Image 1: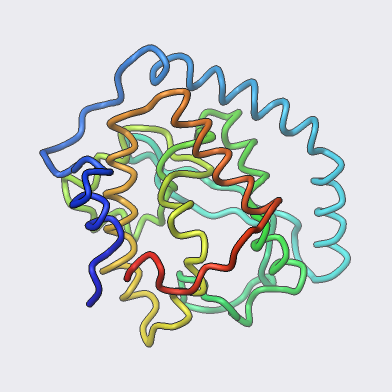
Image 2: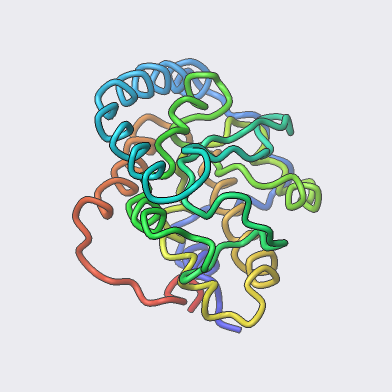
Length: 239
């Protein structure tokens, strides 16, 4: 099994280890006050500025497939509290499947849904979760209760902060669906390889919550969608 990118970064000294015990709650003025201010102002402005795009997206979903415009799902947030995350629906309505993992080419994904997922537009309704205080612009992505139930005490450190629309792990695994599509058992691979790597990355992020780091994560999330410069091969994060 190839050495994960996370391990290489630690060996190179580019990423500090987050394995030295249970991570305390984020500290500092920005982490405790400034971050929430940024969230509220940016989310409110985003909903206003992006309202034409949100309206067009909603109409496109409604006109091209049966079912509601929005998809809601229970995720685990700060301090282990469950909440309903909101997304634009990108799959067929009431798809009956035990799969909790989505891979590239998943037949449940609609034609318009594939476009939304490619450019991360399906995540935009989560700005409402941010305004409600359930999420942040940047923070560990919230997982399903069934996955969180198996976190170690160390991994549960990511629950000390509001989950985010994006995070360092989302950037590293931007092509996660393509990576999973190459595996015989995508869910097992996700649980044993990708999820632990994501949690370690996000624990490291929580050690250094700053305005500069958050702005950097936001830019690295948005720019590749607007200006895709290169195609990443599946497995690049794991080899």
